[in-house]
Image (cartoon, rainbow, N blue to C red; front, side):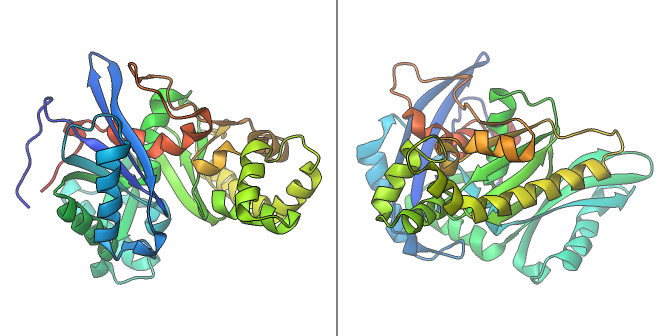
Length: 354
């Protein structure tokens, strides 16, 4: 692919492909003011993606064409796109290397990847970001993605006639929004509740460690349906209206979701220990911030706060975004747009194609 040179007058938009939903957003940044030009959300047939690989790009392209033509609020004015790869389909690990010249780091990361990733390293795209370094060692976050997944996203972009300027993980994109929307100067755990799994990340000025646990928004719905003996449609209404909050069915709902939530709590406690035991500055995790569709369940933040003895809250993504006459997403859908908003906030100077 030819090198692309970026100028401030070349906008881009974000595209977040979920397990069955598509979200787009374009943001114009000027003089520290960030204005949403356009955004939209639609669904697609989830059989078009198998194990993270887009197997039927034409079907997803059809849904996107419909979104662009009929469902956009405002306008998307560019074909340049930043896309997110589901964090659950990537491999991320904090790596400590002896001090070395920067030109030697890629080979060292490759050797590390061969040790901890259960896939042939030649089948992966590898990248890394340096977290800290001194005279003796370098600490970095290494990320690997199966080439077959990345290539399928590039094929979709080609079908749509889009120019891909960046591919990053969903949690990396969401972090960009978190940094400007929330108090981000203390060590924080970010939980991104997807449809069937949830990504858990430690953020301390940069991403430190990431992990994925089973269970997300759709999993909550299915468990409520099973527990209360109702349809999935009815369970979804119950989840979004009452959730874990006070209701006649509160105890039954809490009991039904208990096993899933305990899995999440166990992983959260493990990550807290991992961070605090490795941190030489005796830093402590100060808060947990939730996002994603499953984060909207009433009572979830309060329940997690009580169980973990840490303040838990849902991100407020629109703190520094101006919709300028456009109707913003419904309050119940705000956290669903965190990843796509983070993608849309990517500055052209931060991205490159080589």
